[in-house]
Length: 119
Image (spheres, rainbow, N blue to C red):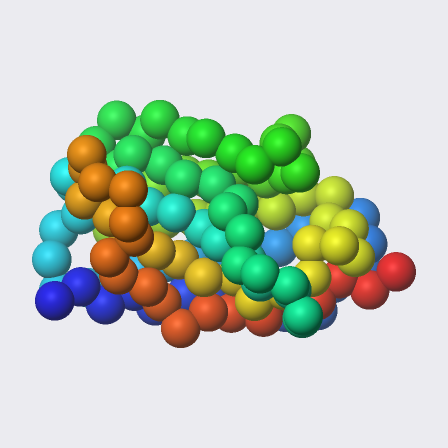
């Protein structure tokens, strides 16, 4: 069983930066795709970014492209989401998730971390 633990959320002013971390435990995720999702109050959860752990290939939602960067550190077994030039509309609960390669459903989810961007 894989457990995902996020950290790094907080309150920041518009234009600021935050870095979220996701630390998997319980299994190696070399054959997984790691994703970040967010959910704003009253809205559905939306995709933010994903990375294929083995090769580091990344993909982003249009709304964050050029401002956010997803990466992984094999030595620390951690996935990061660097968020720059944050906007109030980036506010929400950010969750880390993992799915095996060649599947579409994210199988494991973290508990989420709150990100609040003030104007």
